Structures are given as structure tokens and as C-alpha cells.
Length: 129
Image (cartoon, rainbow, N blue to C red):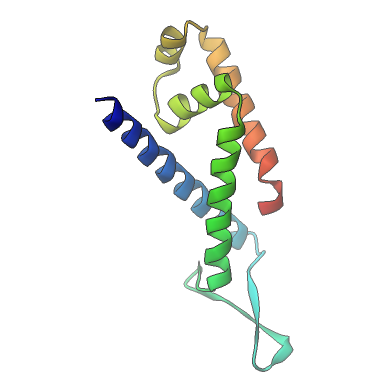
């Protein structure tokens, strides 16, 4: 049973990371910070590498993969309390009251830990904004 739970947790984390990277990339594109590539027409004839609002540039795909790796690294670097609160409360969507009971914390501590974890993750992702 323990191995099945761990695999399920890994799937949730992987899905969250993919969703986060995708949302950051979409936000980046919507803000007008579009990825541009040089065409064979010369350096002053940059072409937007988008079709129907989606990046088609392999460079954009590589950047999304790097972003996913970075998020995974940042989650692993969180302190135990922050990581537990974030993984269970955000990734696992476990109610804060259940996390508090399970960890022998207050609900306020769970909320603070989730807030601090999100803040640390966003600070660590500043280069991707």
C-alpha cells in the first residue's frame, strides 16, 4: 500500500509541475513577452513563433522543461513543514483541518506554511517571469 501511495504522490507532483509550467508559459505569452526567433530573412526580421496563441518553438518547449525541473528542485528545498503543507494542501488538496490534525498543528500553522511555501517558490521562479 505504501508504494502505491508514493506513486500516487509522485503523479500528483508531476501533474502539478506540468500545470504550473504550462500556466507560467501561457501567462508569459499573454503578457506580450513572446518568444521570438530569427528567420533566414535576417536578424531584423524576427518572427513570432506562435500559432493560435501556442508556442511552436522548440526553444519554448525546452524552457518549459527547465521550468518544471526548477519547480521540482524548489519544492525539494522547502523545509519539512512547508513541503508537507504545500504537497498535502495544494497538490493533494487535503483540507487544512485534516492536515492540522494529522500533523498535530493548528489550522493557522498550515495556512502560514502554505503561504510561505508559495512565496518561496515564486521567489525562486523570478528568472522565469
